[in-house]
Length: 450
Ligand SMILES: Cc1cc2nc3c(=O)[nH]c(=O)nc-3n(C[C@H](O)[C@H](O)[C@H](O)COP(=O)(O)OP(=O)(O)OC[C@H]3O[C@@H](n4cnc5c(N)ncnc54)[C@H](O)[C@@H]3O)c2cc1C
Image (tube, rainbow, N blue to C red; front, side, top):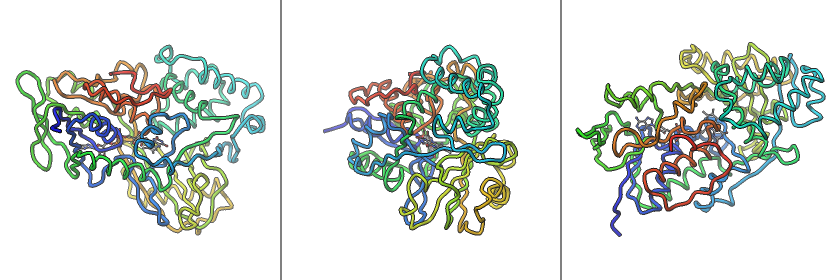
């Protein structure tokens, strides 16, 4: 059957690929244009111990409906893995387990009253508070006032630091409300089960790419979009890529706003809107070692002076037997793009971070680290500062036929694969490809701008 509608998607990360799938299912002729050699964006992987592993640690949650929908659509449900994980906090030079009420009681950096205030503030934000009310208040101001200094310095601030690095003091409480709702929903009787896929998120990516090819979607890689052409009535007519000019009727941009802004005409209001949304970067240093560091999956480093905010021991979640017995740990850090460490060489980053590990894990011998890999991205997330809802761009732009769905549309929720699928679905609705229903979880993503 001849396809009547066409769509060109710019950016072959999960948002672009999910939108391609949803649109192609509705008999739309879809082309995806990606700048890199590999599709997948932040979901890219490399091989370690014979298995693919994400450059940036990834897991999802039991209540993430959109990703479960896609996994089912792709017929890879048998690859789903759910596991309980453990958390810890490194504070005042000591490692504490942080997995439930008993651990909270034993957590000496906070006094008894502080613990009660921490518990009440978590419950209020996760169960009662409405995000809209708190767009004007930074999370840290609210925590210092309501949860107290010791709970904020020991728990809340490190949690924000690990997510936002130098921007942690700009983040509104609204984001925290989205985040806590998500985490509390993922817990069953105090035990948090996280999701992963056998063979890594690459299994999802490869299944999606083969399905897209099967559906006739044209996948063009190594082809950064470098210019956009408009006609005199402000209709987008074509894009310029490394592989030539491509014409079309509908264009969905899933790339960062900073890049879109550079492609727009000087006098366009949309250009300024996109330019006003800042991004920050992330670095993940991955250790491949013969021994484990600890028994904990996720450790927040809550003491100052460390060059990483999180120690995520992946093989305490997905066992080392999946990686020929190797133990895998991510050291994670979010960066302001002007931070010298972001542009440092891999060697400089390793030399700074690795010796600091011994301070947290004195029994771990750095000689047991066999290989170190460093990955970084300048577009880890948007800086969703106060009243960010006013900055969220409209999916349908001022230019006829030009649509946008990117990380800015995830606010006030967390950026995630699940939420990327949500905004892809919302963008398809907006473009009039509305017949495919993607079930909606309790995510707050995709509520603004569509
Ligand atoms: C450190 C870290 C940890 C994370 N952990 C998790 C997690 O545990 N769970 C979870 O669900 N999510 C996690 N995420 C978030 C998740 O990876 C992202 O939300 C999701 O992958 C974003 O997909 P995207 O398609 O919107 O963007 P991207 O993946 O950034 O894709 C955008 C694509 O556009 C391409 N592009 C850019 N410019 C151009 C151009 N000019 N022309 C053509 N193409 C272009 C890029 O190459 C890229 O492929 C994490 C992210 C990071 C950084």
